[in-house]
Image (tube, rainbow, N blue to C red):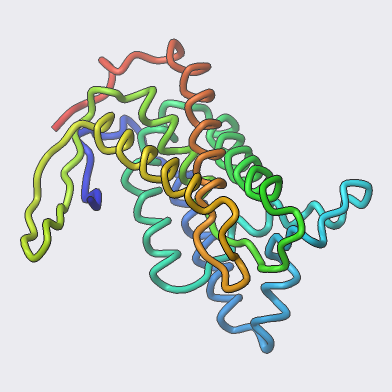
Length: 223
């Protein structure tokens, strides 16, 4: 299932959401243009084995890794999910609240992944944990939203409208199932940081519940 559009029109322009997308794209371009991409990634990505909690410099990648990506499809999928779901979360939360949600979810996602593989030498990078936080917050704040979704069934492709809770619940269940299955697996060739997705989503749920009473969904325009 791939989301195309939600049924809610944001009440104001989601400036911060698009700013984050712009910064992420800019960093990705710098990553591609770097004379030594491997050195660039090793400097700013999160490498669990190098983390030393008594040296704050080794903790900076918990933040910088959020803005790196492993390829075109990686950044496109993350930024598309952020555009679809982030605009309404951005307008519901204060700018500081939205930025705090995004960065906290990204950092906690990275920390969660680190705790399960602290000796791993493979660089961890991507906004997936941060975006997962936005998804979790969206699920709490806009449970009645409908998502226009592209669905692939074997060779059949169609577009249907499903509830946000169903889609995001399915997405989280898939991450949870895949995350449990990845524990103990060989990560020497890299892979998907499912634990980071789970950690970020839970942060988003908490932010959603903390902000649920600060605005009424009735004030949002549905298509």
